[in-house]
Length: 156
Image 1 (cartoon, rainbow, N blue to C red):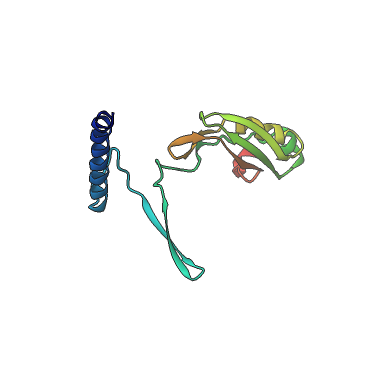
Image 2: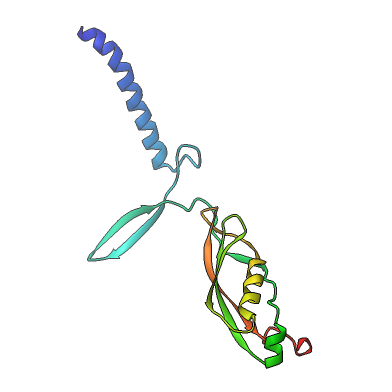
């Protein structure tokens, strides 16, 4: 019975020990630039009277902020023009991960149709979504439309 058990366990134990030794030696010499072996970046923190060594994984991929390609101008309404009204409309815009505007909320509105004009313009914004670890994510940003400072004098 004991010899039968040794015949089954001994080859497994020797194979496991040999594999562990090879992996340990490969790690000492910095082998394994890819595949199963992954390198980690070392971080050191000094404080509290001692030095501790920790590990942090490398980022998976790139990260980048939202990039607006085109932002249409809001129309300065004829009523606001007739009254000589100036002001700023502030909107909270949710930019989706799929590259489409998902929501537009008014934070600070203005009379004479300027708020509605700014909201219509915000729905037409085209952009590249924000990336985190290579994956697109939805973000919310504040967008402002100034009336009439965005317009040139000949548009009055």
